Amino acid sequence: MWFNATGTTASSSGKGAKQGGTSGKAAVLSGRRSLWGNGTDTSSPMLGVDAMIELLLSMPKNSSSPGGYSLIPVMAWTHSYADVVTIADALASAGGFDVVLPSELARRVNENLGELPTCTCSTPNAGTAGQNKYTCTDGAEGFCSAEDTCYAALPFVKGDWKSGCREE
Image 1: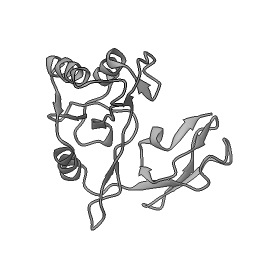
Image 2: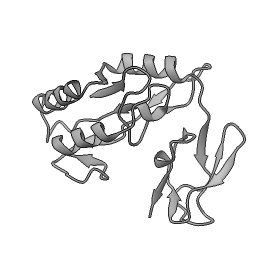
Image 3: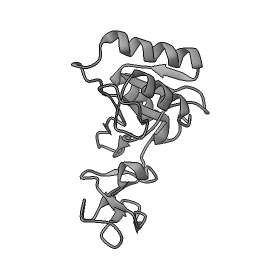
Image 4: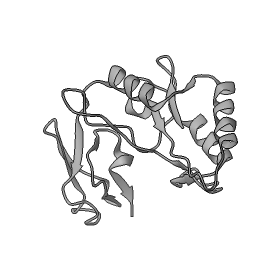
């Protein structure tokens, strides 16, 4: 299931977005949250139908930001096509969302975001304060907040801190 904002003030977000750029590199799109089980806590990575709808409706909408795109993996053993349709219908009723094929999502991400700087954790999962450094392709470097660990094993888009830093 793939969601994309329409216009300049629309979309859904969480974790995972465009990784890498378009100058001879492939963009990697990863899931933000999963439709898995019946979770109701919208901060959880695995959500049920109602929580997924609530989360997506609450997210900022901006097609020129990585936060404006969401890829939602669906656990086939706990959710059906009907669940996906329920979510898509709820988003359509709210307005400002497009449910698109993966190829269209990738095209829109590349078209609207272009080359974005990415960051890499210097020592993934090494710990919090002082052990949570990241370096970025634009030359910047920094640390996650003191209570967070830099966990990402792969590069993440600069500014999409939830995709690289998380509370321990």
